Image (cartoon, rainbow, N blue to C red; front, side, top):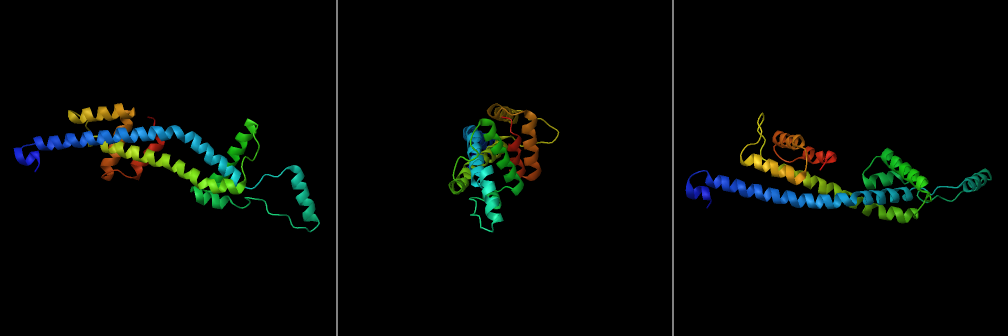
Length: 214
């Protein structure tokens, strides 16, 4: 039996709301800690994924190797397959990117290695390809944490009332969410509006994580 049923007034409702708000704020703090931790790991994880992606492609040929292959071809001899050749589409499916994005990531990584004075290849193509899926999963973990964080923000914010600003307990709740997330109030109000318009947390709310500034 609830406090409302016992008292016959709105005290029980307010107490339930306060419990819900405290629970939502606690969940937000937990989600933010996890997201902050994984976001700190994202650059290294992304660099590893991109390095493996580049190495999973065809072996780069030196000028001498290219000349020898052309000579064998001219003599009617068959050249041996180049490890990793023709794997781009398979890589694209594995990391859920377009062929064009995979090509851009590949070229960007090779350019980075040139600037750093590193070899064009750092790992065996087959070994790199075998490790690429796990590296992508680690990146996906960061994305999932970001989505959960933005869902927690939406849950912790007070209900949105068009044309008004939060007042009383709702204002306190809004202020606490702002303090926890360090996000701009306008950004938080945008999350409120999207949640109200769609009747709850949804893909659009989660997708706002891409522009997270906190």
